[in-house]
Image 1 (cartoon, helix red, strand yellow):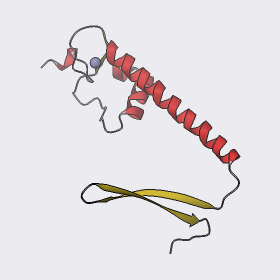
Image 2 (cartoon, helix red, strand yellow):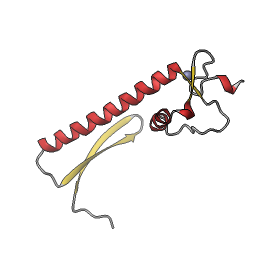
Image 3 (tube, protein in one colour):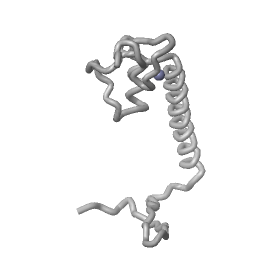
Length: 114
Ligand SMILES: [Zn+2]
C-alpha cells in the first residue's frame, strides 16, 4: 500500500489531496471531532481527500452550531426558571430482562461530599 497517495481518513486513492499537517485549522477540527484518532506525523498517510475535507468541515460546523444552540437554550432556561438551589439528576437503571427504570433525585446545593 502506497501511503504517499491515499487519504488518511477514507483510503481514497483518486482525486486531489491536501497535506493535513500543513493546515493547522484542519488539524484542530479533526482533533475536535475525532479525539481518539491519533493524528501524528507517524508514517501513516499525511493526506486528506477533498471529499473528507468537505465532510470534516460540515461535521465541525454542525458540532459548533449544536454547542452554540445548547448554550443559548440553557441561558433561556435559566432566565425562565426561578432560582432553585437544588439540582435534579436523572439516571437510568437497567433491570433484567429489558426494563429501564428512570429515577430522579433532588440534590441540595448545601449537600457536601465527605
Ligand atoms: Zn478521504
